[in-house]
Length: 367
Picture 1: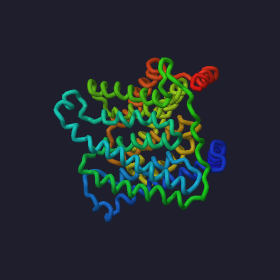
Picture 2: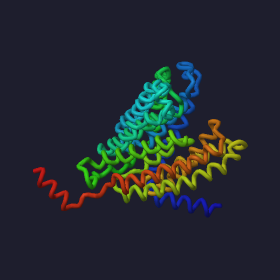
Picture 3: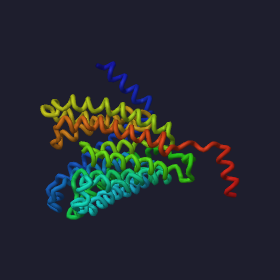
Picture 4: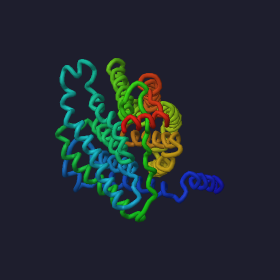
C-alpha cells in the first residue's frame, strides 16, 4: 500500500512539479463545497424559495469559474473569478428569459420544446471568444455552462432572482479560497495565436471553430427532434469541449475525450452501490477526482475526462438520478457528439495551419 501511495505521489510530481495544480485543485474543491453549503443555508434559501436549486447553480458557477481562472496574482484571479461567475449567470439568465418560447405550439410541433436550440449562440461563442486568450476562452465556456445549467434546471423568467442569489454565493465561494492561498500562483500558459484558416475561407480560426461546434450542435438537435436522444446536451458538450484550431488537434482531443468517458462512466456506475452505504467515502473520491481533473487537464486530457465523467455520474446519482440508461447515455452520447464533430472538423469545415510562406505573403499584401 505504501509503495502504491509513493508511486502516485511520484506521478503527481512528474506532471505537476511545484504542486501548483494540486493547490488549485484543492481550491476548486473548496469553492465547490463552500458554494453548495452556502446555497443550503436557511437565510439564503428564504431569499428565493423557487423550484430550482440555488446550491446547484452556485456550486457550478464557482466550480467552473475556478477551473477557467488562470491568473498568477490575487488581484488578477479575483477579478477574473468575478467576471467568470457573472458570465455564467448571464448565460443562465439568457436561457431563462427565452424559456417561455418553448411552450409555443410551433416549437413543440418540430420537437424543439427541450430548448437545446437556445444553446446555439453560446456554442458559437465558445469558439469565437478564444481569440481573446485564456480569459476569453473561459468566458465563452462559462456562457455555455450557464445556459446548460438553466436548461437542466428548467429555469424561467421567475427564477431571475434565484440566479442573482446564486451568483452572489458563487463569487464569495470562489474568491475567498483564492484570497487564502499564496499571493502568487503559477498562471496557465497564455494561448498562442492560432494562425489558422479554413481552406476556402478568410474567416478567423476562432470563428471557424465556433461554426464547427454550432454545425455539430444543429445536427444533434435535428437528431434529437427525430429520434429523441436521452441527453442531447451531452453530445453537444462533447463537440464544444473537443473542437480545436486544427483538424488533427480535434481528432486527438476527441479520441482522448471518448476514451476517458468510456473509462470514467463505468467507474462511476461501479461506485453507485457504495454511494448508498458509504456516502462520505464517495464524497472523498469525488473530491480526489476533481483534483485529478485539475492536475491532468493540460497534459492528460483523457485522464481528466475520465475523472470528470466519474464525478458527473456520482453527482447525478446523488441528486436522485438512478436510471442506468440515463447514466450510460453519458458515454454513448459523448461518442455520438465526438464523431459528428470529427466529421465537421476533418471533412466539412476543416482548418489547416497557415504556412510561414503564406503568412509572410499575407503580411506583404496587408502592408
